[in-house]
Length: 258
Image (tube, rainbow, N blue to C red):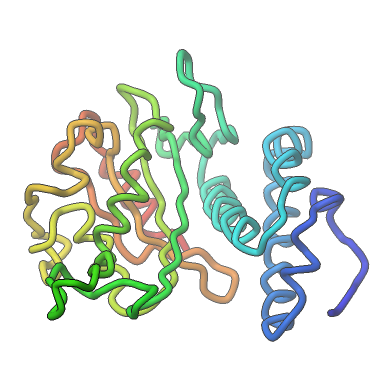
């Protein structure tokens, strides 16, 4: 396990670093932690230490697993990238008459956008993982593994609870794992038959997130990844039933991240 001087007081008292930097993935873990610290330094420079500290310090002191740190890293990477292009950014803004908060509120091209960030890893197919598509096991006595798109629907279903009514709301999804992750997300949003559809012409089906009335709060969903420390938007799906649509100029800004 490697140790080095601390560069960011934001990470003081965090419990996650020893686990993150130990074991077979220690070298890669340290590289990721370096990237997190660089993002923290940048967002502090943009927004100031008070806003960043108020938003994150309590969570950081409670981290106990690598998974928690990875989820925070995803949130930090999105908020930092948006802060670079936004004219105004607020981290974890309170919403009137709502207990849960979104991860950020940003002003881009003159429009106020509320942001939520989610990360869901994929353990892959197998007895303890999931199947590729909706299908029945050959042996009816064996409980089928949950298809990836069904798992994503289950995990993402409550997202609207963290977003305000009557606003432009944007969800960023990280999905590290096996197979066609972008297509699994598209299935969850539009329905099982949407797996092979072109994102620009995908049709909305039943039993999908975008078909749910609660999800009319969500203006669009972006599938994002970090490569070489830079956040990239791989796909952006506007919600065809959104109560408030994602403006075209904001779409362009999000697609051009990275």
